[in-house]
Length: 353
Ligand SMILES: NC(=O)c1ccc[n+]([C@@H]2O[C@H](COP(=O)([O-])OP(=O)(O)OC[C@H]3O[C@@H](n4cnc5c(N)ncnc54)[C@H](OP(=O)(O)O)[C@@H]3O)[C@@H](O)[C@H]2O)c1
Image: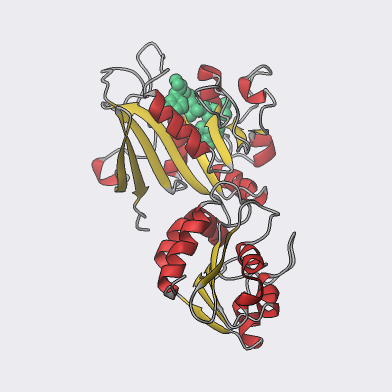
């Protein structure tokens, strides 16, 4: 096989890392490509699930003795601690790798230090190849580790005139089956799905990740979280059906904000503590408004249907905006057609002060 450049190997490692998305929490996604001394690819690996072998170990196992004198190209600094698996830094040293190229340093104080251990053992360490790309591939995990609460994606569905339900309250289905399939795929990439008790009382959603065609459940289910200050979730609500874990987060358990409702920052801190790194906020407009007003939303995914309703509730309520100067400015990062609908991805711009 022809030799490849370190840059090319890192591009491949980032691609490999993405295969673990949605399955590795509370761990990051990581990809690794091992090059032998001549620059030929002799091993590839990614971290497929929490508790499973790390990317470096998979790649080393493939490479065998050909790793000696070679270069390990990894998307994240190799770990330096013994958790459910041994330290990757030690495994790389034992395999005789002479150089390790890292895209992003590990922000996790428990696992970091791999680069220093490698250097101390005489392994050459280079940092910073395709860093932006690797950061983007791990954005939820890196963001949540750096600040201590989950990366929160607010997803909503609305008509072209911004309505989330009709005047009589009916809302199923605003968007197409294709868009709903897309949402189930999105649920499969997060660790928790959040909804307000208002949505549970009105729509009685299951909030599981399913195959919409035959109803089968995805192997890995996000934790279902109902934000329910006073515990109004009915005993027979579908979220209590046992198909996935459910947490009814009440103000008594989480703590209350000044309005007596669930303290949202405390809720996110508790979810982080429970190993949630990426969470999907699915509704409804009141809860979304409260999260946005508190500046706790990292990404917005809006499914916009080619329909007009002219009346009915808006997709967002009470986001703390009363005048145009206070509008929450967004940067649109992607627009994709999903069946007849549009999926718009946007990032809230950071506010001054
Ligand atoms: N189009 C869409 O994407 C979409 C998605 C979901 C829902 N919906 C629609 O939304 C409607 C329900 O709307 P909704 O606004 O009543 O539902 P919601 O936002 O799901 O729930 C609101 C409730 O959340 C609870 N909550 C707990 N802590 C809160 C906090 N800190 N801040 C704000 N709320 C908090 C409050 O009840 P307590 O104080 O009692 O806890 C509040 O009434 C339904 O018609 C549904 O179909 C649309």
